[in-house]
Length: 106
Image 1: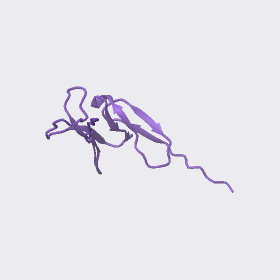
Image 2: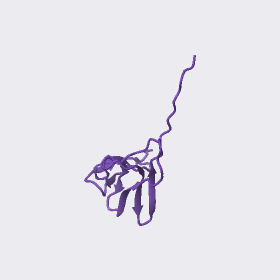
Image 3: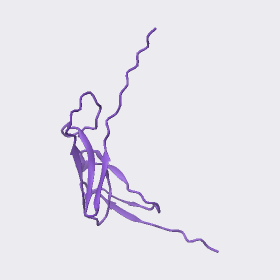
Image 4: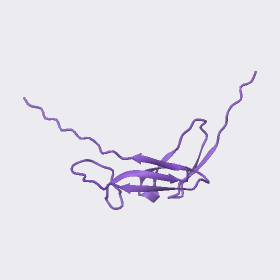
């Protein structure tokens, strides 16, 4: 008795830069990359042939002393990277980093 091997080949492209890739995973996944078109921000690859836009959304609220993801091009804080498709929307949320200060008292 032979067991069939599932071979899946998916072709991916980025709508904001020229990067393309091929994956051969049988599980559901979506590759990400630091996108040149979004100034190095982490962005998803889109299945080749699917119409979508991937945009960076600027944070609009007060930042204070929080450490946030900045757009390297203009220094503005980026809240999320959004993928808009005809059948829905996905987001990568850039949450601020918590910072703690510890002092040793003797």
